[in-house]
Each structure stands twice: as C-alpha cells, then as structure tokens.
Length: 168
Image 1 (cartoon, rainbow, N blue to C red):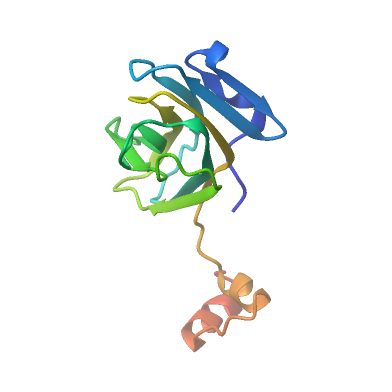
Image 2: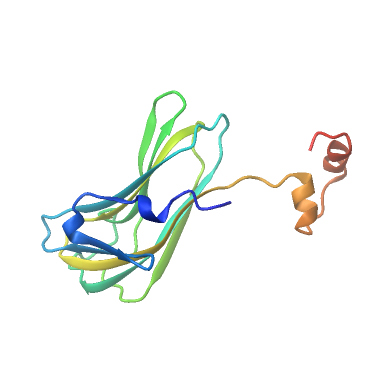
C-alpha cells in the first residue's frame, strides 16, 4: 500500500530542536530531561480490521548517552478504534548510539477497525542528536484473486470460481 504519512505534515513538540531537509529529520535533545516528539495523525475511518505496517530508519549523529533500547527513542503508534477505545505505544526502537542507518519496521493487527492512527517519533531520556528518514505507515490490504493473478501468484479453484461469478 501507499504511505499514509505526508512529508510536510509533521508537528514538532519543540520546533527549535527539530529540522527537516531532503526527507531527513534531525532531532536534538541537549540533556536527559528534554523530550522531543514529531507526530502526525492520519484519519482512516475503517469499517473492518486492516493490519498496519509502520517504521523508519534511524541513526545517531552525536552522543546518544542512553545505554539500552527502549521506547524513549524510536517510533510508536497510537490507535483509536471505531468504539472510541484506543491502544497506545505500539513501538519499535533502534539501537542507541548507532551511527549507521538502522531501518526498523513492525506490522500490527489491531483488535478493532481503526478510525485514527497517530505516528510519533520520540527522543527522550538522553542527550543526543539523531536523524530519522523513510518514515511510513501503510495498510496491509490482501490481494484479490485478480491481484494475485497479476502478481503471478497461483489462485485456488474456489477463488477462481468466486472471481468468475463476479464477486471479486
């Protein structure tokens, strides 16, 4: 699926500590008491459960004094469901102090249809300068019988009958 996030729609909790250039976001936390968030909310209004795939690539430019992987540095998703309930902090986090780009991704199947998804990049509990790029949120939509055939995937006879009957 297509990326549901839009490059220019990121909201920074502290614009003086974030910058974006050529699709790369730089985030600066001067000490372990500062938290900086980049967030973007997408309205989905789904009527059925659709798995979501999200992620980004991270690297440390300077410092990054925190010693372990945890959700204080990385990307997470907050979901709001069709019944008003929510699931928060569905997260993945890169290795701290890694100077190489580390692409990270996770697929999550929600328990109910998702009305709204908020994607958040978080840097906290550390003095650091990090960069983030290739941030994405996609829906995992199963291929139809026709789509499977177009991708060269064999389709079971019952699926073909379904397609021939015009239910595809």
